[in-house]
Amino acid sequence: MSVSPAGAQPAGSRDDDAFLRIEHVSKQFGDTRVVRDLSLAIGRGELFALLGSSGSGKSTLLRMLAGLETVSAGRIWLDGQDITDMPAYRRPVNMMFQSYALFPHMSVQANVAFGLKQEGVARGEIAERVASTLELVQMAQYAGRKPAQLSGGQQQRVALARSLVKRPRLLLLDEPMSALDKKIRQQTQIELARILEQVGVTCVMVTHDQEEAMTLADRLAIMSEGEIVQCGTPHDVYEYPNSRFVAGFIGSTN
Ligand code: ADP
Ligand code: MG
Image (cartoon, rainbow, N blue to C red; front, side, top):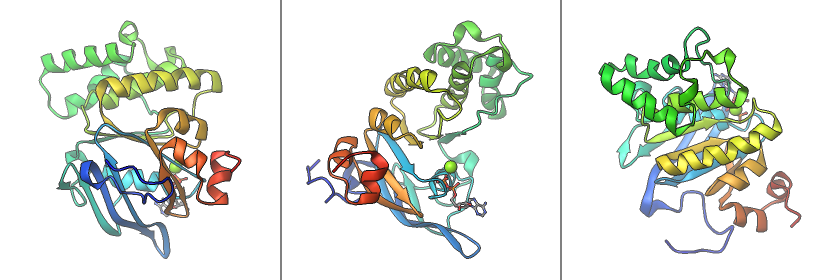
């Protein structure tokens, strides 16, 4: 990969090893375009963070990647396959929502197993995959508990397990830490980075916490009004913000 000066690199310049490629994607609700001709390429195994003010279109972009929202224009490619018109359930993509929405009446084990049962995975394999995934997120000893008997951080790990057990090739996290208080959030960030590294899954994470993005992400993009205003490594965006908006957002003094 060639190294170009920070700021000169357009969003989507990692074309050679792009795993996820978003090409000129727009989303329109009525007369309002909430995502505008957005292009971005993300490498295999990359942890990519999306930052931006509220209403800038981050969740809408994730929902289009997950197939939960149609695109108004443009194409989405995953590992060389055009998934733009592929229904959500067929995509090797999983989205973890801001509210974890665990089933309150089900145990941790049953919550994590649920999606696999829906897919018709054999019982023995379900047991094996659920056990190893709970091990991965260090929740094996809580398998029999109900969500209400867990802390916020533990519930978040169960939600992550429920996503990972499906072995998605692309994991989408929409503000995964927002329900956690600051102290738990920092522990959980380190834990999340370890888990994602171990699994090696490509991940796009929306966050409103720039510190979180700076710490965790391989690269990040700042969105404003449906567009990417800057994309690069945390270091490059911090050191060389291309506008006052980005500088203000990232909290750098340049
Ligand atoms: P973010 O996640 O960055 O806060 P969203 O993607 O949720 O932003 O929303 C972007 C814009 O699109 C907002 O103005 C929001 O009100 C609007 N929007 C989102 N979903 C819909 C919808 N289903 N119908 C109409 N407008 C929507
Ligand atoms: Mg959102």
